Length: 163
Image (cartoon, rainbow, N blue to C red; front, side, top):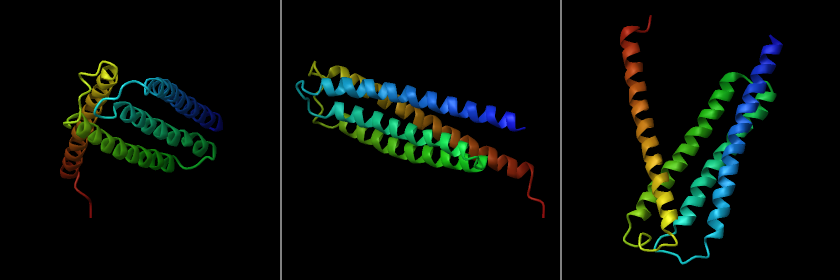
């Protein structure tokens, strides 16, 4: 039994660390590229700043998820791990949704003249791609929440509580 727990802990550690390093590498590459292109002619909105903060939010989330490695090593209850991951994920999701809403706000603002600025156009396209995938993710989560609520209601009707 103990050997099985060690294998499970090892797998959780490996997966969590792998995700962290992938996110960290992507974030560092994007932030370095953004910093190198900041000295170019700015457009009406601060696209590069928005992209940097978006990836920093993802990196902070992955750092918080990386704490699961320490929690697992302390042999805490799996329920605590599930609750911790859920809380981190929900908080990161709330911050990301707020940042996406801000991104849509600045993208559709009258100050946005980045389409005519050739030096910032690539970052604007990147921002639009992130906004699209963010909106798609929000829609999928909303649909999953609605389906989950419907399934819970159906289960409650099929299996009423016993008194």
